[in-house]
Image 1 (cartoon, protein in one colour):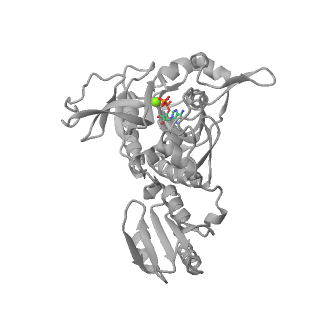
Image 2: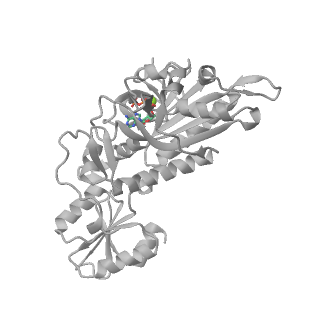
Image 3: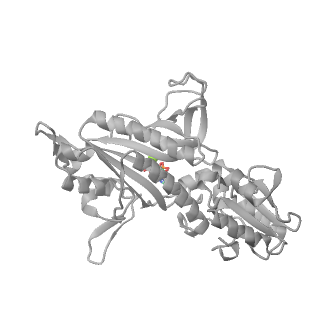
Length: 409
Ligand code: ATP
Ligand code: MG
C-alpha cells in the first residue's frame, strides 16, 4: 500500500477531549474517525487491525465447533417483552417507533433473537449441543462514551451462544471457551485475567470477565500476579496481600479493562421464551443457554493501551495493520524496487512514498506503530536499514537477508 494514496492522513493535533493514549494515537494515526460521541468509522488502517483480530477470533471460535452467522441489528419489541428486557434495558437500548407505529429497537445484545430462532428450530436431543456466533455492531445508549473506542455507543462485538440439554455439557463447553478466550487475548498480545464477577440477575453462580490490567480501565479487580485468577472488587471478599486460591500467589489490586464477559443463563430463557427439546427418553427438557462476548473495538483500544510509548503505537505483530513500513528517505528509485519485491514475496507492506520531510516520515512511522521499519536512503545504497518499532538499534541488511530474518519468506 502506497502511503501517498492511503485514506486518511495522520493528524498533528491530538483530539481535544482525549485522555487515554488509545484515543489519541488511534485518532492521530488515522485508524479511527469520530462521527459523533461514541460512534466511529474504522478507517483503512484501523480496519486492517480489526481484520487481523477477527481472523484470530474466528479461528479460535471455529476450533471449538461453533458456527458463524449474522443476525439482524433491527429487532421487534415482541421478543424483548417476553423476557421483560424491553422495559429493563429501556435506558441502554435504542428504542423507537417505525412509520407504521410498530415499536422496534437496535441490538444491544442478541439473546432474545437467537433464542427465538433456536426454539423454532430445535426439538430434539439429536440437534444439541451446538454453538453459534456472529461479529456485528451493537448499539448502547452509553452516558460515558468519551474515551475513543473503549466505550462506544455503536461498537463491534463477537457474541457467541451455546445450547445444551445437560448442565454438565454446558459446563464443559463453558470451560473450553474460557481457554479459547485466553488464546484470543494472548494472540492479540495481551495478558488477560479470568475474573469472577456477579452473575447478574440470572444465576447464583459467578459470571467470568476477561480483564486486562490497565490504568485506562474503568473496572477494579483483585488479581493474582502469578496466574490468571481474579475477582471483580464489586463482589470480592479478598484483600490485597491475601493468598490466591488457585496458585498460592499473592493478590494485588488494580484498574482493568473488561475485554470479554461470559455468562451461564441456565434455563432462564427456556422458561421465559418457552424453549424445550425432548431427551432420549422422550421427556421434555429446557434448552439451556450460555452467552459469550468479546468487545472487538474495545480490544483494539486495549492493545494500544498495553503497547505504546510517548511517540505512538507499538503493534504486536499478529494484529499490526501491515508487517513492514518501508520509508523512502531522499533516494531515487531503490525503495520502489524493494517495495515491489516485498509485495512479490507476500510481505504486507505500507510504503511511505510521499514527498514530505524525513522528520515527518519518521514521526508518522512511530505514530502508526508497524512492528518493522525499513529505511531506504542515499546512505543505505542497495541495502535496507531495519529497525524494530520497540527497539532503538538499527541493522543494515540486504533484501534477501531481511525477508529471511523477519518474514520467513
Ligand atoms: P461494561 O461493564 O464495560 O459496560 P458490559 O458488562 O455491559 O460492559 P457486556 O454486555 O458484558 O458488556 O458485553 C460484552 C463485551 O463487550 C464487554 O466485555 C466489553 O468488552 C464489550 N463492550 C460492552 N460495552 C461496550 C461499549 N459500550 N463499547 C465498547 N465495548 C463494549
Ligand atoms: Mg460485562
